Image 1 (tube, rainbow, N blue to C red):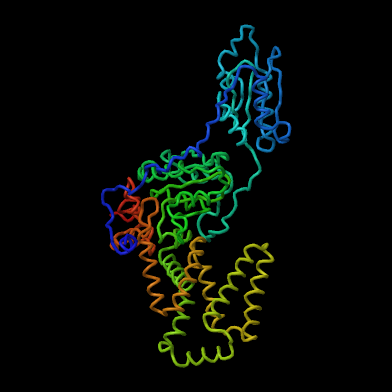
Image 2: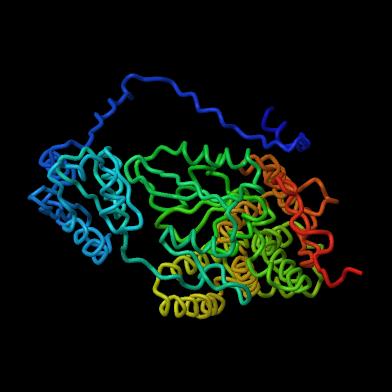
Length: 538
């Protein structure tokens, strides 16, 4: 009963400006067998030999051959050593800013220079980013992330120097979100490069970037971005809470984080938007959303999103309003055809032949005269063949994938028609369906329509057009019960008269985009004044 109540009962949206968010911790049953003893904390000692022996054991040195430990003798034979991972540091910075300056460290007979650990980083290490720590866990984490650690005999602290410099892909053009207009830069795998790309667009001190580590072992670093004087604080708190609540050993990609923070990862439609474009992420921040970047991932998560925004393309923001609206209409029709065209064809030919024009009905019957399979078998066979060609094209190298598409789509289809295995009209139906799926703006949404298409085909084969209509209603009601970070997934429905609703379907002219999305409940509602074109003022 609760399922039907959620599907059919409408709950109006709160007007108090508060998100419906859950920040209470999950209560789980306690089991003593799951209890793990917390490892003993290790701290830096004064004796440098003890520190060296501990780090050798922890990093399996010298078995671990990319670990570099460089012993040094400072003035008056005071012992010191530096430690880093080869290939993750800038060797020139280590030589010039660390080793050379340490070897020039003066010696005082009364030991004055060694009384205070901070004097090493403040006065005698020529590097911009340096900090002292006595916690071995923190020091080892920084070493694993590409820093260099310095230890000096007689000091109970180690010194962490940020000399990271590892191989990475340079900033390139977007591959999956291409646009003729607008910036042509895409995120890379370097976290700091990605945050710099966004800060280059949004030049304000109100842009906050909170550091978040995910992964109990990997401790993969991420950045939660939001504009403090625009984003709703409840939204920021919920996103931060979910990210900090992730408890796994290793995190490799931001797509894994997207699934871990989703309420229902088994739902067909994703409720987070992934983008590889800094300009799209920056625009989302200015609307009052949150953006999460993860080190090693060339994409960002935009939180929250809704069903309408998944159908929008990046180029819509840079086109004139009539062009953008025409593009949106074409994409909506393409998505409709990619999901429902095979089911509609099957339902009409099996149950509702009377709505087909007579000559078209004769043509369909003549084309299927020698086909040995029923329509449902023919449709599933061709759809499955097309999906195999698509998957094979993705997995193969670029030059081979284009050849595979031509061979699979043209030669195989023509051969199937000549062999009387399928009818020509079925080839046309599958081709239009495939082209429509390629016109989908979001890749994850394309997967949604591919799965839904199979469900609608089954309903059409059993109930005809009534089954297709029932499937559309049930899925729409199901979408209406979903939320994305506290925001209704079908927002701004049912407020059909709001500006947010009109901009969700059609693109307004640039000078009419005055308000931020109302369903985000931002701190600042207006994005531009009533008259943004000053030359129009009288």
